[in-house]
Length: 268
Image (cartoon, rainbow, N blue to C red; front, side, top):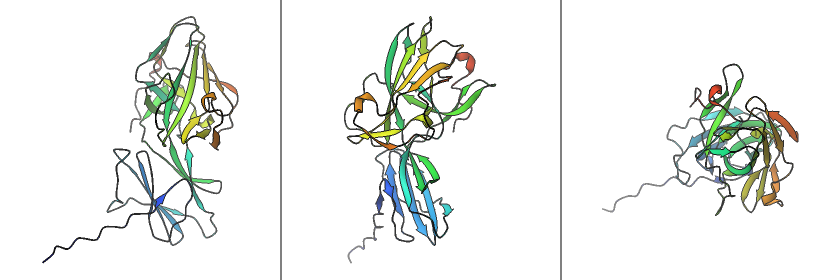
């Protein structure tokens, strides 16, 4: 007697950036980086199930007991849209190999920032989920500081080569040591809410950031260069910054051992 082959579950509809259209109660899958985001509509509600995969190429089926998040949208809601976003907290960038800048020296590094995926209806943001789950860290001291995401990076001196990763945003950062002492670049705070996202030849970029270091006792002067970076001057902007960027501002940017920066009190 021939063996019966069990029916395989049908392949779910694959979703991409832009507006979402799905039949009622039929789950769709948005896959990018480590994120596998399942979503469906049922009786006027939106149901979401984000899952983090161990590998970027891993195929993950809808869990047998999905941890659905239910969103009630109302009868006159607009169309759901999936859009790219940057992290919802500042980043503390940890170069794998720290840089050491003598006084007066300037260098440029390229930081790879994992995209976030934002679900929105009209101007309303429902949810942001990361394509790579980052741990949280504290930047500053016990008196003045803030919660950030920790991002370990190679801090390349040359822009990425080869095929671009669709879930990565490249951010060029120029650092100038304006102090009369050496600058050890071990942890750098980056306020991503001031950055826009650009696209060129399937690669994604953020604004050029220029940091002028003036010593441990002073805030750094930071410039966000308007428009796409010079490496991709013809890139198209695909997402505005969340915070209206001022061309120049000051902020605490580099950590010191005395600050206790980088101690992962909030590591998750």
